[in-house]
Image (cartoon, rainbow, N blue to C red; front, side, top):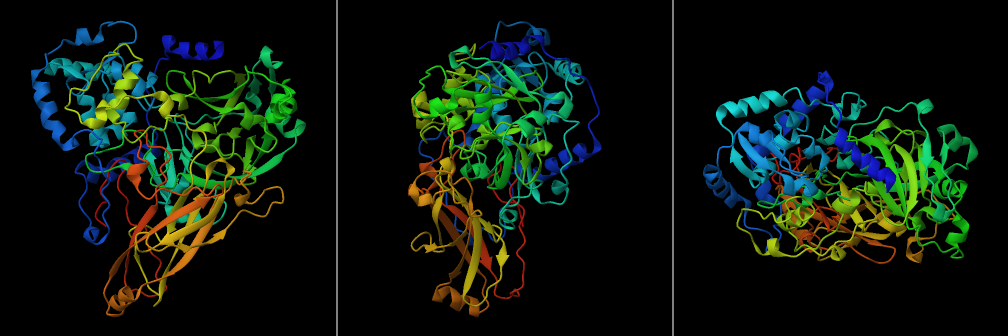
Amino acid sequence: MPRAAATAGRLAGRRTFHTSEASQRQGVLAGAAAASVLGCLAYCKEPALEDRFMSRQESRRLEQLPLSCAPAELAKRKKALPTLPLSEVQADHGEGVCWVTYRGGVYDVTAFLEAHPGGSARIEMVNGSDLESYWKVYDFHNSRPHIQQLMEEYRIGNLSASDAKKSEALSRDAFSSYYENDPQRPRADTGELRVTSVHPWNSEPLMHKLVESFFTPNDLFFVRNHNNVPDIKEEEWTLEIGRNNDCNMKEISFTLQDLKTKFEKVDVISTLECAGNRQEDFIEEDRPLYVAPHWRGGAIGCAKWSGVRVRDLLGAAGMDVDGMSLGRVKNPKAKIVNFEAIDEDETGIPYAGVIPVEKAIDPFGDTILAYEMNGVELPRDHGYPVRLMAPGTGGCRNVKWIRHISVSERPSELDSGSKLDRHFSPAISWTSHREHCAEDTAAPDWKSPLKTGAGDKTTIVLDQGPVIQSLPVQSLICYPPNRAEIAWDGESIEVKGVAYAGGGRGVCRVEVSIDGGENFHAAEMQRAPADDSRPPAEMGMGRNWAWVQFSQRIPLPADMRALLRKGQRVPIEVCSKAIDGDFNTQPERMSSSWNVLGICVNHWHRFNYVINPKLPKSHVPAAPPTPAPGCYKWPQN
């Protein structure tokens, strides 16, 4: 497509990166993030009560050999590699080939370009240079040992000590942070947000904050950014809709005031969940997760979104949305609606996402361009001046800071979801995924130098790894906080949480258990404000876009009550599962839905507690520290 090709072509004329001093606040946040992962570097000490919690180590039969075996193998290989002159690193090795240096090593990362979660362009811009200054901005690379180890699989040589110093010095001023103008996030300073990365900013509220109100406050709502946050002035912004002669669409543009005054304003109460929510549940010893942002469960929220219907905008551009909705107009060239954002990476590649045209034009699909969130102007972190809200779809589809909409037969080349949001079988390992991605690079025959296991020999068939649109049924225990000490009322304990199902399927029931699922109790549910136009979830008609909040007081068994009456502290695990409007339910085990890209994580949710009978009934449980992003062990409480 001409527009996509033109944008992708910006790589050829990369921007010059200007040195600038990082803001004091971002420096503090980055320092705090680095401090928080010190335990992760040592893979964290076991908490004192760890042996009292139920341990659930899932099967890894299909994954490659234990990660702990790799360092010695890679160290031996490193010594056998040649010493290469810096001039060879800086030379032109052909189109699409990318060499970098890091702490004395030389790496040919060509094969990894298409597998890089941050996009290939962010590696290509460092071609021939050292990664040190780059990783000072994207410092999570330094704090996650599995990333350091992964690099060694692409090592092709070593630099002399003098060339290593020279390479680092040459790159020192070549790259600087472009996040200087990101908005302030006061809730991070008060400890109410779990910050998974500072650059780009990604944060989720602490789980118990999700049940303090039905509508998630804007400044607590999870933030998933891929780039820096644009600072957009209303008078400088216009929305462009591209021409498509096959759909009788003309090129047209609208200002923000046009959207507010020329079209009907509609409200949609909808939950938004990142497709990678609960990624940290997939992390086990010897099996890290290489994709970001490493959510624990808080990457979900519910808000009232207000704006203009996308079908009205497409209709204003000339598309016969009513005829298509009724099936009277057939147009095989109109299958996808593409949304291009203003936010770009350092090379000028914008974020983009797609939805099916049916979702955009369905009168009951409720797809809007939102300019308000919970009754106020859309915050910068959430897409000011407008963002897509296609309720029922994954967060990655709901593009922020939109500047251009087009209709096409196939997804735009800018759509990152076509590569990073595929749901593969549990048999596909990280090595299989990388080797498959390498086929689209200048190193199509790359193979990992490490010994491999059964999962690494699995052939990837794209038809078996569909690109996600909607999300599966989900429940999340939120309160009391996981691993907290809780009081006892003499008979029972109470838990609270949220549940959601994508595609508008809604939630029919939430069940909780304290005996590993042997017995479940149906929980009380609070739903969105009544709306006569929304059919009940069990009708199977969709349009149930909002979550439900649940609570349940669970009586304790006699043997547990007896121990508590003796003054003993008792560990307990609570699990939850939800049933959606189509009567789908969550799988019990993580291993049945594990996938290499860490999406659609929805096995039973489990929280562990210690009931302390000596605590007063008025005791308010505190949320203990969680593992650093990417770390599988819990820190000392």
